[in-house]
Image (cartoon, rainbow, N blue to C red; front, top):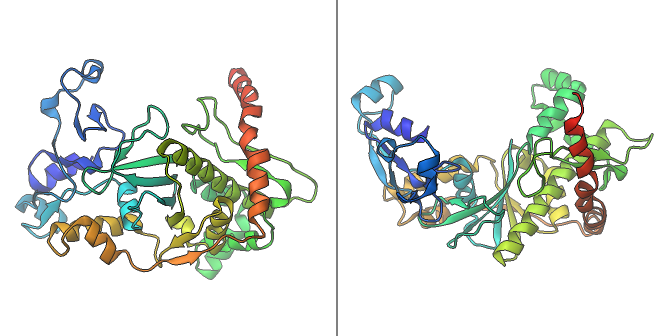
Amino acid sequence: MSGYLNLRLTGDVLDSIGSQVGYLPFDFKQHDWCAASDWKWHSLAVDRATLPKLQPVGTQLGAVTKEAAQETGLPVGLPVIAGAADKACEVLGVGALAEAVASVSCGTTATINTSRARYVEVVPFMPAYPAAIPGQFNTEIQVFRGFWMVSWFLAQFGAEERQRADREQVAPEILLDELLAQTQPGAGGLILQPFWNPVLGETGPEGRGSIIGFQDFHTRAHIYRALIEGLAFALRSGRERTERRTKTPITCIRLSGGGAQSDYVAQIIADVLNLPVERFDDCEASGRGAAMIGAAAMGWHSSIEAAAENMVGTPTRIHPNPDAVPTYHAIYDQLYQPLYRQLKSLFTRQQSLPN
């Protein structure tokens, strides 16, 4: 898609290395199309001559043509800059460029990312994607349904919040914080694993989600807290996997995405991961990262790194609550981590049963 848009804007078949996320036959280590001998050319009906020429992030790919200007309203001659994928821009946009700083996206797909100069597959056979810094890599672990689950909760259990939001002209997600305020860490004993879709590195193709521990006093507020805590547990698992594979401890989290706007969500992530969490006044880190690339390309800053340093802004830091950390550690270690292994055989059997 990015190559197609560049073609329509400039008339040239060019694309950014930073936009090649999950595409084949791309060589993720070399940041180029695979060598002619690679098996992927024999397995895919793709001819290299049909693929765009790849350029480093921050390169000017061309300029807006007269035809594109007429169709889009963009000025003729406006430079078109090689950008990067959404998550790569998000990592850059929060300034998570040191190996010990992780970018956590509280978006539709929740992710935990780190930047590094060395290629590391945090999940075996899953590549480290091109970073928004030329020549660098992002290790990424995804929770596929992520904070989409907040929308799921609103659709299934949030009629009251949806109706109030209409009356008060606010986003219904804001009102869900009241449910978190009504409950304590641990959600009254409810444990949720947010695998509504399989998650690479965490489940196999049989992957399904679960909620266990119901008792008669539980309310939808407990379910919502368990949902947020479950997402935080999944991100903690991703953090630990990243640390094991990279041999680098993560010492700080930088948040972005819609879920990061909630004070309660940010605090839960800090408590579950037992790390300081930093966030910014807005959650649009991906757009900010793209702006950093553009600013460097136009010569307003000496490099993309310099643009990030000057444009990232000052974050607000949230420290773990020492009263909540032991509770979350015990739940994660004794209940959350072994849960999927205990349920896996049942999920496999479910697959063979009639719907």
